[in-house]
Length: 218
Ligand SMILES: CCCCCCCC/C=C\CCCCCCCC(=O)OC[C@H](COP(=O)(O)O[C@@H]1[C@H](O)[C@H](OP(=O)(O)O)[C@@H](O)[C@H](O)[C@H]1O)OC(=O)CCCCCCC/C=C\CCCCCCCC
Ligand SMILES: Nc1ccn([C@@H]2O[C@H](COP(=O)(O)O)[C@@H](O)[C@H]2O)c(=O)n1
Ligand SMILES: [Mg+2]
Ligand SMILES: [Mg+2]
Image (cartoon, rainbow, N blue to C red):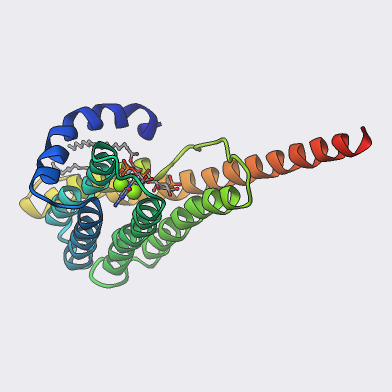
């Protein structure tokens, strides 16, 4: 949903910045790499220590590079399959660091085995959500579904909740519960999304086989 509705807005807002980077001679691949490195560092330095506010600020600053790199590639007429591969692959790395960092907090100072397991489930199910589409498309199916909780939703829900929950360390009361709720929501939403995508590929596969069988009868 966010991918559909918010992308146009961010494309408009980020286009001048992307143009400036191109004028400075920065390549889209460099933005993809630096954005991922910054997101990973922000998540793994701050989240395991429970410093959610600064973690979210750092990760958010760097993760917007994911909207800038493609914008740069399109403006420069340099969109490539390699760029698409690099972008998607490094998305998975950044996501692993974000949910892995949260799981590390609950395994350590946060001292909550159940929430650690939920964060690990968010990590794993998010990767499976992306894999269903990548594998379905590689097999030649259109995978004509986005699903309830795509990457943008996973990030916005988790990072917003973590950022606000992090205000607890500055003395803001009654905000810590937001992160556990967000993790449960992302976990449940990702499970639904995996099911939506798997059912779509199953339907598309059946339709393709039926069409092939009908073709054979003629
Ligand atoms: C009191 C202060 C507390 C601090 C609050 C901080 C607030 C910050 C909170 C959140 C910010 C989160 C920003 C998240 C930005 C996300 C950007 C992003 O990564 O978008 C990527 C997404 C997809 O791009 P791709 O096509 O490159 O990726 C594809 C995707 O990975 C697919 O994965 P799948 O969905 O299948 O799992 C892969 O299949 C595919 O291979 C891959 O190519 O881009 C978009 O979706 C575009 C839209 C992004 C819209 C983001 C909007 C977020 C903006 C603001 C949030 C506002 C929150 C306000 C908080 C207020 C708090 C008080
Ligand atoms: N280093 C890169 C990154 C991206 N691309 C191209 O952009 C598409 C992704 O666009 P986003 O707005 O989601 O970043 C991707 O599929 C590539 O075509 C690129 O070429 N090089
Ligand atoms: Mg990108
Ligand atoms: Mg991306």
